[in-house]
Image (cartoon, rainbow, N blue to C red):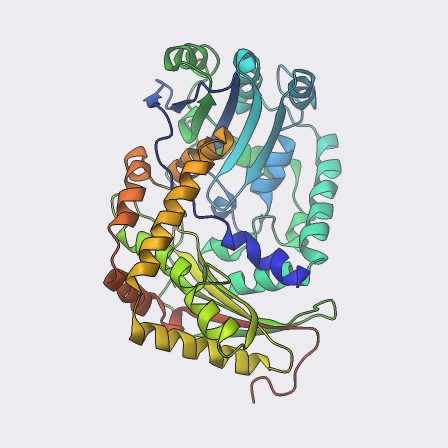
Length: 447
């Protein structure tokens, strides 16, 4: 079961339902840098984040993994800092720092005492347009990235299976390419590739600065003008141009076997709409559909029909992550009980879906789920890093602050009928990928 959860559980993460935890101020510098300030004066700490509107889905063909590779290289020397100096300085001042790459964005952050904000802002600004890469950096960091891929992907059959599913889900769109990159392409990334990607995408006019914590907007503006405002806009930055996904006309099916798999399972994902600026209704309905259908191992529709009566699964669930620049996926999975084949498990899951579409959504269950979501959101406001992440990830995924503020009302407005309607629209097998993962090939599969 550990392999199953390692591959699937991240998609079941608590739903992010942003609300305005404290006063939120936003403004844009003359060079195009967008700034968001989230005040939270309960503790003398601050989270300083720079989000770039570029991710792995913006990579040139044949250079998969370059966005993540460059993220690693951003911790090397700049015109003003020695290699590793930024992280060492943050740690010496009692803070922490890191970075992350996704399909749609790349982010860099520091969490530190509020009186050290100017220090981290000065250093972060230094690498916005002053990265000073040398050839010696490339091989060492490339090997680090390849080893990271070995640990996270190659050594995990569930992760390898997920890569294959994503590649099958998207016929043309770059979401079908792994964020960390294909291994054979990672070996070929060069200094020139990294410099080219940096020069094409990094700059204040392609970034969002999010500062959350014990700060005042006027002081953040002064510091941002001092350190970021002097950086000229990057003329190479162009509007994002993503290839469009063609109509999907046929279901795709995968059978993946690996002797390291301990518990076989079935996963199906459907192409689904993401949260769109000014039009979040379908995404709100899909968010609640995932919770109603498979969000709880005790009270969801899948739990009732598959886990308990009669028990046919040791685990079942559904998930949806709508925060995405382009079309995302709605997924579901079932781990069958011992003695049940994957084909039987898939049939049981399909039967549960069909019954759900006919029976509809229980009004009391929906009200309970909405209340749980709201309660979870209130508790999550204690973490300023979490709040800063919500704003940064939403804004780099095409949403606005108004959309973030409107998300809870959009969820509250969803009706039982809305959920069934969006389920009927999304559950189109022509847009689906169904995958079996097992320790060894079962001769009956496909017969």
